Image 1: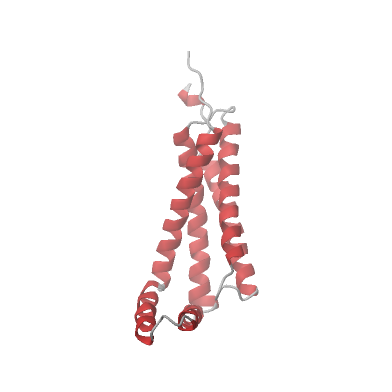
Image 2 (image 1 turned 180 degrees about the horizontal axis):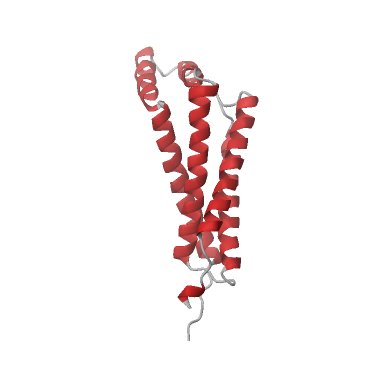
Length: 174
């Protein structure tokens, strides 16, 4: 019966590309509306909802292709695979935005952060300078790419775990 399982590869690739494209579209909307410098919480919520929706639909598609059966390990494999491909595509967009399209975007974002820190009366100039030095080190495109992919994998694992636990249906073997 193990040989009757549906292939995860096609589902992972298809839904990973869908996740990547929708993430890039959200990024383009943020760029066009100039919200990438100081994003609203709405964009974070939209990004998480996209991640939840695409991974859940991908796992459901695998379950449907597998005659309605799904075990937790397959759900995790499909969900994390989708998150990885979507994260890589999203990281490519981030790299293009910060290196090609808007090369000074990182400096602009750091300046917005600095202004926000200075608005806090409890923050001294020295603390702000220290915070900005750390933020500057963490804002290189390669570190942003790494955090983007790691974050996508982390949330992909959590979403896959819950979706797999909700949708799992074991195949009876006689």
